[in-house]
Length: 96
Image (cartoon, rainbow, N blue to C red; front, side):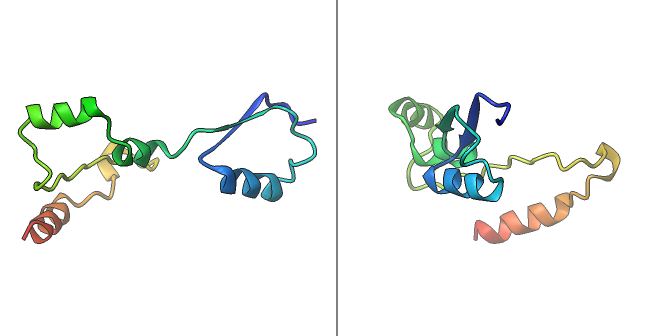
């Protein structure tokens, strides 16, 4: 038997994929928690409180918002492979 009480997945499609890919369909008897995609769910499901906060910051629906949220990829701080000049160039082109 699988030694886990819960399995998390973003949706039913991924639950089915996990069960088949990892052959756990018949051995997992615990709960499956479908929790969504943390990175995009709050973006797509804006709450009234978030709308109020955007108004407070004077950010209207007609303005573009760029979120820079890097994910650590296991490299050191000194060799992160990040090109700030390319980011600035890309943002300037995007905002034209």
